[in-house]
Length: 308
Length: 220
Image (cartoon, rainbow over all chains, first blue to last red; front, side):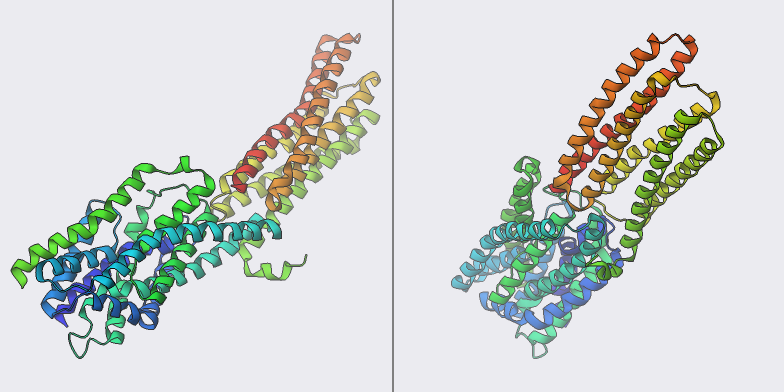
């Protein structure tokens, strides 16, 4: 169980960072109270982890055979990468950190499931593209509904609040379903107690604790949005992100909700005008996507010299 | 209203909607009182009825101020409409100047007990009607902003036309006033009345410009 602590710490980091993708806009615009958002997200992330997490857990577990030592080393390398990227205020992808560490493991020890790895990488590329397209489609649908119903802008505010709650709960569910594999996937089968259910429950709980304890501070620094968005566009981005992440959870591949939200936000940027896009931030995001798995792989190679 | 029942899901929003509706009604009543007051003044001077109208205009203007503050407090304390809040409050603040102009004008007439020459009565009434129509068209635009922002252009075009007509009437009236054999002080006072009356339409146009920008932002 103690060996699982590294994974649970990763879960905590994931929860504290990814909650902003789900409820960030609603909380910072004061449409939702932070504690309401955090509690809802915590409950639904655990439900998502337990209900749909096992499929993605098995995918991560299949990438490379693990021992307790390698599993701990992967988790520590990924957690250190996530922490480092957070400290230098770069956007993080826990999926990429974990898979990067697993690739580092294969470089060090050999034995990697290349077909599984290729499947994961293809899904990573598909994530922001899919979210981008989905966001455009969903936005058109929302606008059509708003224009057709001539809903009073005052009551639209009320509908938006409910919509943010529902979208946020769904987003948390999808996050748990998809990303639980990053947190505990490498531990699957290494101990009789490490069943998919137990791992999903413990990992989901660690993500929930991260959301409750540290995500408020991360939300307070939201303001580095790629694009200025109104409430409708923010909601569309959350929904598109949640749908994309959930889709890949059904496929059984853990993907990055951060990449999905970036793709969705870029879609909203297309609706407004690309000149409103903050290119400097986008460059930072793309740099982080490339750097994260590399750093994680290098860290695994370094740490494994002392642990394996 | 078909969907009225469902809006009980949104008590804060419903309360805000009711307050905004009450505010717009109050300002409309203020304009009606002003119309009756000025028409009566031109007919009978500073009568008891005119004094009652002045008091009523003051009450309505104060009530409008209170409602405006309630709207502002409600929006900020309940964090309502974060996207449109600034625009809506700016609109209301701009529109709220109109009842102030009406009240100020009536007080001006009441205090100075101004005699308005009959030669300019008809044109003055035309100016009053056009100015108040501009304000009415503006309200039409404000109401559309909340539900159909793309349709407000029609109302704002009418505001613009009415404001141009008011400018023309103001100029003609001012020329006529200074052509009349009156005391220069009286001429200046009458010119001031005409200017104030026309400023209702000017304020409606200014508010219309804000409304246009707010509607464009809402549509984005």
